[in-house]
Length: 188
Image (tube, rainbow, N blue to C red):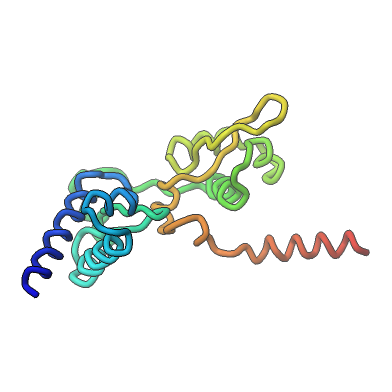
């Protein structure tokens, strides 16, 4: 029994090291291959570590992002980290950026022209700011004249808002109601 526990603690140490050194999200497949275990075992080890950090109120957390895992600082430590580096307050997103980001998140992939059609104003500045903040990125080009760039959200978007994947976005009740009202008015 002691050998199994020792092996488990060694595996936890290896996984912890992989996540720490990477600085980026690491896929479950890559972790499983590295520790030479199946995905279920690797996932169990990751969740055990994540629970330990959470339960012991540690300064780091393991978060899941699109089926990959990343080591991050605990949100409750942000003020102390900011003070240490004397950085300005984390700049929030303006109303225009939030509106544009919401459109991209729910309608992706989407072109800038489609965003502008929905918002009714130019989206050039908002899209470029969101790309600069790494919340939105180019995901391809539309097969139409001019081949406009299509945008989608990034893993940084998921991290920023605390989602594991895009499927965790809340339902748009208002949008559903608007679509329903629109279809009812067409029928009349």
